[in-house]
Image 1 (cartoon, helix red, strand yellow):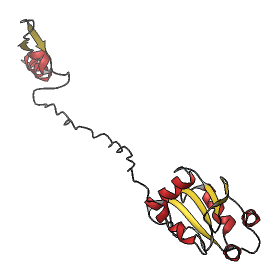
Image 2: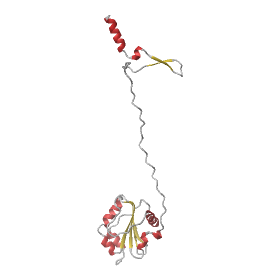
Image 3: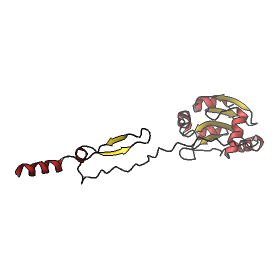
Image 4: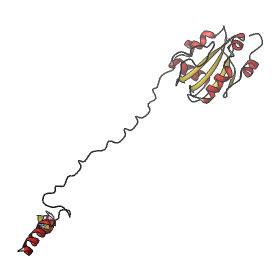
Length: 195
């Protein structure tokens, strides 16, 4: 009797697939197939599958759209208010983080007196501000709207990503230009004495 109890206990502890394989008919072959449960699972075990979660991919950045804005007429540009009254020192830069612009600010810092002695007004034409709007200390002219800045860039042939320094005489004509930052001494050398 003891042997039969051991056999019954062993039979119950065997995995279900070993005791009673499940048959199914596959539609393509019409032959019985044996589907086995994973080993180690008994009748009271349940298989829990993790729910399938759709991964959200990182959103793709939207394509950069550059608005096409027509430049304002240069004849209405704020720079024209200086015509007949003062020299204009135009400083073009794509944004306030431009290294050349930072160097130009350093070169002109604390030299507003020298510029005013030569009747010269600074006009910073910085398309994108990544910091304070007031780029230069001292006397300077607001370059106007984005459309005004575009008209100045078009007038003097300065591309969006270019840095340039241009000095205009009192008649609004170009005296010199540089694609590198200029010291106050270099700027003064281009100004006529007494103006």
